[in-house]
Length: 625
Image 1 (cartoon, rainbow, N blue to C red):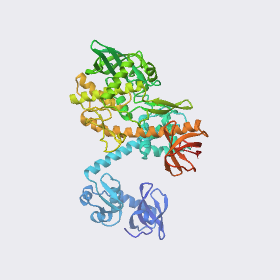
Image 2: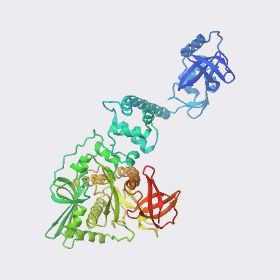
Image 3: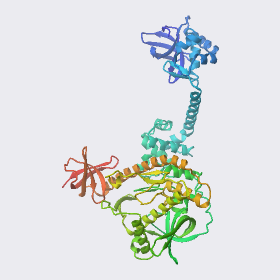
């Protein structure tokens, strides 16, 4: 690089743009200069990328213009430049300049500008450069096109975003689906993108979280009642209004049944029903599952949304369904007085309730009633429920189900109704729940057995081997396309197939089964299913995390609402900094308690809460006994 003097032309970057200027005055470390547009600068000398010898002119500005004209008149030879560079070795600009255009006059500047203006051909690292390989050139062009598309996208949506965040009127939001997807991606990954940068530059007085909340409300991606933990997770909540809810016309069937469902009393997403009738040789049992896969095209946008969601999620404020509510609680649900297409397991039983034979069939089912678990618990000594309960006990014994003394079947959920929160108690040992559990295990086990016998690729639910001396609950369930013995159900293989309205895996398995019994090629190969499994398991981990965090949040809200300054029975689980993790005995719920009180791990205590911080995840109080 030449020594810098008054009259030297220099190249420097200003806000990402390469500028040429001429030195008008110089000190030891700074220089004053003027560019072709007569803008003036006072810059550190180390900012300059290239320096020319001083131009011999008393009038510096015209000399700069003349120098710039010389640059534009000279065209570097691309072939010579490529021949002088290599894609495997770095070269300094001064070395390249000596090979191609000795000196630091206008030709050197022309060469430098050419190299900088063709980043798809040349890769720079500080003052070193090399030729990009053909693959690198293609990738650079691809990334440039992507960045150009993103800039164009931001320009198109910017007026609507500003109107929303500044509380101004707007007509429509262009490209709403893409905006929604990018907002969710940011919430899930935390990785900054151009959309978030643009949002942050809109001066609305809100922080990023509130801006995203405002935009998602306007986009129809969430509502004002959305669980705050679910909202912050970035997982999908509402369905876009543009999403087609159209279903395939029901296939004709030759079998019809009358059945009833047994489920929670506060929902409408019924995907299973039971028929049970006396026959000449014993009984006919039908376990009927809504044939969702026969109604939703596997290549549809609706199916793509189920793949993104993976599962319905049940939180205190309500259900976020796998499918739009008008389908999950309407046209695909086995609701009372409806006729529905079902994928049915038909079992012939003898008078002792032993299975004589079984088959799967596509059927039409009339739903005569939707019972709650409580309804059936009250009717359990009447028929057909009494015989069904006996069948459930026999199947449980046959698969080796054992009572676990450590298992507590009582679970407390928190439900939100308006502004009120309450605990809801569920006893999983109730006769009706045990009955349905066994029938669904029966359905899923037979489903898996059919697949094994017919070479049908499915997503199986396996359980890792239990380490010797370890507790059964320490085993891990996982998904696989390889069938394996399932100790939890006592079956040679097991799948989830009984809840296609609520679980993506069940829906996929149902597509596979329908193809087999109807005689067409399965839509998914074993490799296709293997490719799906990592995505499914990753999303399930996210869903479990949201459920746990939401449960903690609403527990704290409920305690804040109804149990401040009220003695509560608890059990100390472990000490933590500033307090303890305790379990509230009445509800088997764990709580992070900040307290100055002291006690021993394992002690049963009484606590009083003075303050609760739901957003921070803890409560503060005292141990009073």
